[in-house]
Amino acid sequence: MTRIIVNPSHLSRDEFITPFDKIFDQLMNKQFPAFQQEVGVSFNKGAYPKVNIYEYDDKIGIVAEIPGLDKKNVSVEVEENMLTISGDKHGFINTDGAKLITRELKQSSFKRSFNLGDHLDGDDVSANFKDGMLSINIPKKEPEMPKKKMVKIS
Image (cartoon, rainbow, N blue to C red; front, side):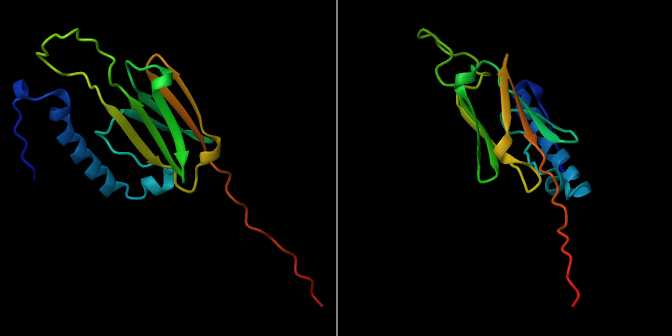
């Protein structure tokens, strides 16, 4: 059993929650080992941007929270069955030479990838970005029907 000692005055929210996320991920992977293969999307808690993933009858939806950026600073790409969300948060805060006392806001580039697996159609992905929320829809592939061939009997 892992013992976690917490002193909240010295930890950021992410530093506090990350160990719990890792334990939860380990439990989920043990309980549902085939989830990633069945749904076709792999994800890692603690990564940025934070996402919710939804499964519909005909698609998978990913909603990512990316506050403070415009659509022009965010990119969604699919290459070799890997969907990648990336962006750049550099230079958005003008400090006018002020001395930094506390840093909680991220100012960096980010990239997060999702393996689409064999059941999702990476060629027909759509995305929408509004008010810091990125919505991505990935259609499911139609299952291939078994081929049937009539054999002529001679």
